[in-house]
Every structure is written in structure tokens, then in C-alpha cells.
Image 1 (tube, one colour):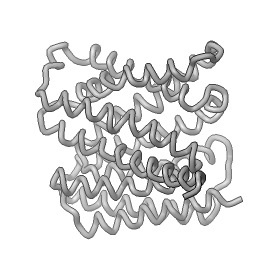
Image 2: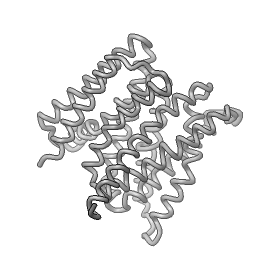
Image 3: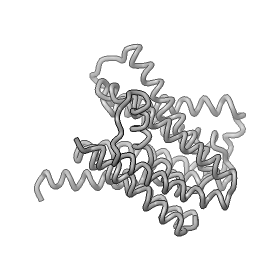
Image 4: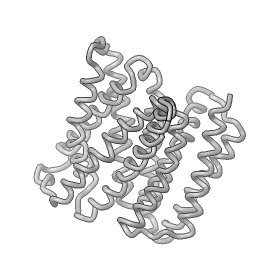
Length: 299
């Protein structure tokens, strides 16, 4: 095997593993909720254990680079709050009400939200084929949501809204981060922005909860360590390494394994039902996003 083929194979493996690892976040959160912890406390522990990793990442990527200007720091703060703090907290809160499968399908709509924001903010056009892909993917989410709403009522609607707002928050980060990525570099920006998000989550806990709320079951601690390392820091690094080898487009395509892996882990680990509605909705979402991304890459 040539060096180029080895690099592509390694990139694909990293992209697949990163997508699967990131998808495990919802499973770990659902498991932790079984021990009576709330979203504010749970995300505090996740970010507490992730903070040293991202701080080291930011320091490593900043070596030998010029210091950030005041404008850069304001940008990092804004992106850290929207892209990682709000997106993470809203996601954790929504998972208290809906299944991991529905949560992953909603978050998988993120590329369509980026394009919609580009249309609303900058007047960027949307091709008819892209619109068709969006219609197919959103129909799949509505199908799975309708099934859960019949079982859980208003809780499903509230959880779906929270996770959808999480996806919107992360889409805002992606829309506004392009210029800063070019100027600071992706690793440095991610390290700094996630460090800001970690500090926000810690501050949120201090403001909203008594310190006694930090006393949780040992299982919550270990699940949070796993979440911070295997499902937070590791996927970020693996996907970035994959993009270096195979490019953003191919890395995004391999991300299609994410919803499927979440559903499989939800059935296997959480005992979530795998119904014909979930299967049909997943096929629609993945098909719609595939059509959408293919059209987005065409000149």
C-alpha cells in the first residue's frame, strides 16, 4: 500500500471512530440521568474533566504564535458561548426528555441550518436540489418526533425544541468561525473556545446550584470522565486529524455513521425501542443529508 493510500485509510478510520465516539455522548448522558443528576450538574462535571485537555490544546496550538488581539478575544468568547457552552447545555437538557436516537437525528441536520443561516444573514442562494434534500431530512425528524410525541406527549416537544436550539447554536458558531479559523488555526480556536465553554459551565453550576449538589453517585463521576475524554476531546482530535488526511468533504460524509451508531448503542445499551418509525425516519434523514451535501459541493 502506498503512502497516499495509507494516509487515506488512516483518515477514514479516524473519521469513522471520531463520529462513533462523539455519538456515544448521548448514550452516556442518558445513562447518567438514571442516577438522579440534573443537566446543570452533569454538564459541569463533563466540562470540569474536559477543561485540562482543552486548556493544554489551546496552549500547544498557541506556541510561537502572536498573542490574540482584543477583537480576537471577543470573538473567542462569543464563539465559545454559542458554539460549545449553549450548544452543549441545551443538548444535555433536551436529552432528559427525548431518546438518544431522536437527539442524534436532530443534530445531524446541522449542515442544513448553516445554509439556512447563510441565506438569512448573507443572502446566499439555496439550490432546488439542496432544498429537496432538506425537505427529505426534516420529514424524517418529524416522523420520529411524531412517534415519540405519541408516547411522551409535551415532554417530547420540549426536548426536541431544546436539542434543535442546540443545533442552531452550533450552526451559528460554524457560520461565524470561518474567518477566525483562517487567522488563528482550527486547533487553537477549538482549544480556546472550548476552554471558555468549560469555564461557563462551571460558573453556571456555582450560580445556579448549591455546592452540595456536586455530591453525586460515583457512577456519574466515571461516566463524566468517559464523556469528557472518549466522547468530547478524543473525537475533536480524531476528526481534525482526519480532515488533514482526507479533507472536510469526505470526513463529513463518514459522519453519516453517527446517527446509525447512536441508534444501535441506544437499543443495545439503553434498551430504547427500534421501531419501523425510527428506521424510516433515520433513512429519510441520512438520505436527505446525503443529497444536500452532494449538491452543496457541486460548483
